[in-house]
Length: 412
Image 1 (cartoon, rainbow, N blue to C red):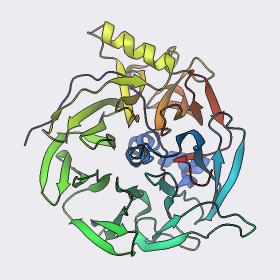
Image 2 (image 1 turned 180 degrees about the horizontal axis):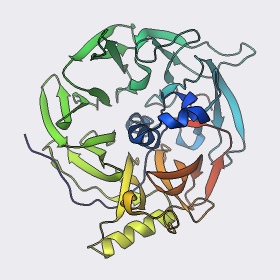
Image 3 (image 1 turned 180 degrees about the vertical axis):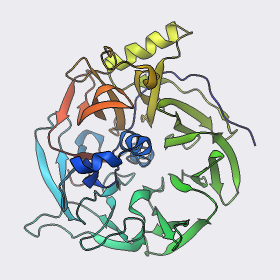
Image 4 (image 1 turned 90 degrees about the horizontal axis):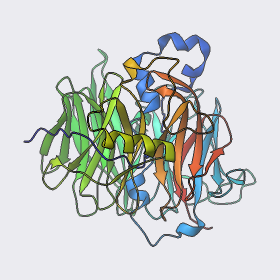
């Protein structure tokens, strides 16, 4: 198999959904002492992003009526809101999800935009790896009792594994983790068929440090990322076709809308670079790239004009409906960025900041992003969710600890 290693990509839009099934209790001051490099990078670039590939799979969806579905976290519950793309201050209650203290939900919207699947560690439960539950909802369910209550599909799944839709929208894919008494872990990938609720085990591994679900495109195999001391290996389940993506850690894997390419972020310490692989040839691919914001694009353009530049980082790739790729950009390598250095990347209401794309609306007009104060990985402060319009204007989504789940068009 071919070792994949690209040189540089053209800056594009970035898809970032913060699926942090990571314990929110770490936000508390006393827990900050426990935050190391791996957790820091996991918060910035979570392994499970909004299901962008699924979100753009059905172009016939009612794109003009879509709204951004977000989850606002509090310690024992999360409130889901529908946010108007043109005016984020206009929002409508969608669902309240109760959960164990300190644990956020993970979720993804169906390719047709009218169903939400989510995983949650329910009240009274303690182990996010082994005790989470998978639910699906067809639409808003309000405190008044209006609407249809979410349906339970599976128990005993791994919250950190998130949930992924197949591109045809007929099944959900989740991870189940088993933890032995000596701390060793084994992983299984479960596929839940929506038509009858049948659960099928697609893969089992006990020889890797981590296993992450990437997705299953139309007429294609299920792709997973296997993490070990040797690096990250891409595996096509069933055919057992695989290749080494990198001898380092990778994250943010994202399938293109047509299922022929895989974008991902390679991590070397705090340095980040996006690469793209052709799934037909397992060779480097070079789609058109753009940044999440105008200032980020300027930094990318400058990078390509000055071919010798190697100090610009890219991360969190997300595909647009037209097949172009969006990425987050920042000055780097982060280890060399001085705290007082001025950042010229993706400013969102401030000159000091950068933006990571999350998910494009189905019509390609609006982009949800995560906006950070700071210069890049290892130097971040406040974070907000925001929506970038066709004119480049950026509007902030109000609320603390906002998780972007994707674009919803059901019943609007």
